[in-house]
Length: 127
Image (tube, rainbow, N blue to C red; front, side, top):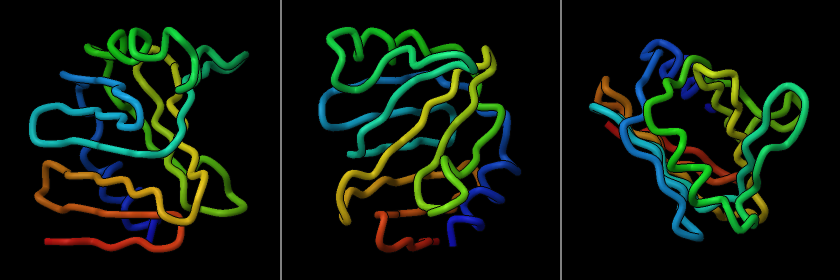
């Protein structure tokens, strides 16, 4: 079902990040008519290196600096086990989300009104 999430999210792109915060353990991203919230570990990277991870002392500041960027692409973080999302931002930064246990939910509310609630072991769509 993650393919459905990726397809529906992609249809809404680009999405402006109007708010972004990290208050351990919750990562929150949102904009007009959409939001993503996760309890999973995460990291920000570019094509060359990891920029910051959720355990770094400057993680909250790094997430706040995402405000004003747009999500331009969403994809499965790995093709081997398609459960963790990754978001490419307009400046080329990629936010990768990593499940570290079998129940770390994330939620995604799309401008279309679709709501997805997921954990690494299950995924549900709500109307």
